[in-house]
Length: 309
Image (cartoon, rainbow, N blue to C red):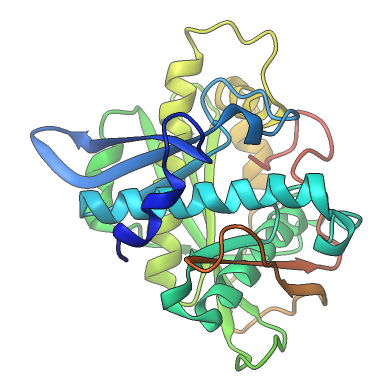
């Protein structure tokens, strides 16, 4: 991924991206991954999201600093596209089905449309699978080995990380062959009896597990910082993070919904209701695509006792 093609989107005054930050994790003396964040201009922030830590913008992980920055900028462009669509042509972008960022995806145009469409579909399936797991206990998981190279990042936290995967049967989508999709849910069961999640969908189990582990790590760090802040006016996602991380019965609540099975077969998924390429001012450098699947509830649906973060 080339940083040069994304430079026009970064401007400290006019945006849409006004700044990039990068740090190495878990620390300077043990550099396992670079984590970068890209900050959106205030005019493109989601007024419904008032997060103290899980901010509305872009983020990216990589063993290479510049690549992590490119991933972060691309995701920030995806968020910008979401806000642009919300304020200009919401209905044509599926906001009547789901008014959140669910199913949005962005990739540099040089990578082509097929990986982008898969990425958007995986984003939509991930949200659907989380809803299905929590509302109906409708996903059968197998406990899976965590990625050894990332486990050292969790040594600073007290508790135990567990990873679970499920194989989902994909639906026909454009000209892309029908393939199984791996859904991974990682849960860090902490010393308080709480549970902190991270999840991902991907074509392979190793990719899904590593992405879900890294998201869990981000949520763990966010919880650590939230503990010392005024949380009187935070977003529902951070309210849920605090609830599940501190509530002593949360770990048991999550475990009750984790249906384990020895089966390796694919599980049926829901139908696709929207599959659309979204043109806009991010072209020609970046492509945006959105997929929405039937029965997918928005992330802000329901109360605090909902394991969707």
